[in-house]
Picture 1 (cartoon, rainbow, N blue to C red):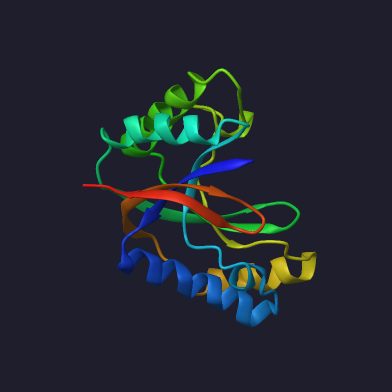
Picture 2: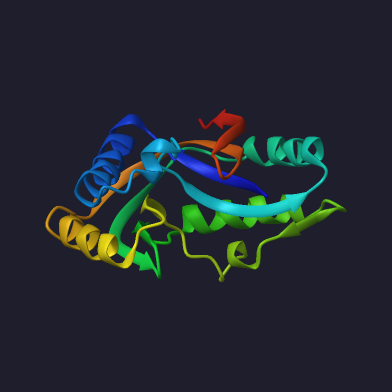
Length: 174
């Protein structure tokens, strides 16, 4: 499995990392910290045996992408064990996901996850993962008392492998 993810400027990273740290501190669940998962939004997930071709396709798309702003507006949960912060799906995020998906779908040997197709995708920034039911309840209470909507800036896009997180290549956006 490969992930194409967008990454944030330092100010946005700092704020998201504070939420990750609060969840870890109050629940005792250190998964996000131990696995060194950076704040990010995955915009595509796919399987292929053609890593180099995927990199070339992404390089073509990246030339057309720019830095952009988004509003991180809400907190949510994927039951049973993931807590996240979610942005408003704006034109910037949607177009980026469409462009990346279109480029990858041109590959012969690729299987794009159905959860990362346009209009089937829930953009999110994970702040707690592998939480137990009790940890989820604690995390929700902690975040409920500290979260407020904020604006973030996307400055980078990259290709990575998950579990554990491993960057393959990344590109700074203009």
